[in-house]
Image (cartoon, rainbow, N blue to C red; front, side, top):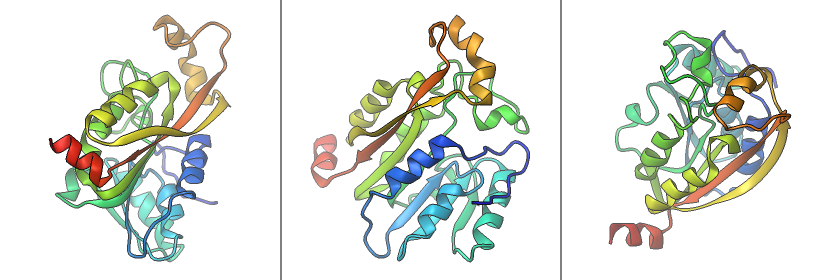
Length: 226
């Protein structure tokens, strides 16, 4: 689908498609609240808002992304609320039945990219977990009882680390989708650096993408509270 994408805003790729496919398997009640964290162009917000009977909120720390997502949803006649802010900060105590996110996860530089850098859309610190760890820590408080989180990222960024953090937060977490993909432009440019870091072996030109689902069941919530 056509999506307006200003410079510096993440272009939907195979990870977005994998996340969208996982979303299609989620059952949602009428009136369900869905949140797209790090919406970028609003691709996942568009997918979610096309599901009948749901209400969608999208958030991004990039003002360019917010404007793009507002445009891309408005021209389709979709009533998506798009807000500007860092992860869950602008949402107060609001909870959601489903949270979807495709956060920056590529291992990059130790120093965070500047606000207007193109790298801000993908650079997630040396181990690629700068944003992932924050999502794992903050998302549970914004899930309604019985709600779910769907998060996509590269296996290079540590699948077990994400699962452990989510389980420690009281969620039932597992991998629900996997796909191997050839490196795109960003990963090809980072290949040598990833090899130096020991995150990538010689001759590797692809990565495994995963979608993690984490559910907040009443049982899990009571167990974590105890």
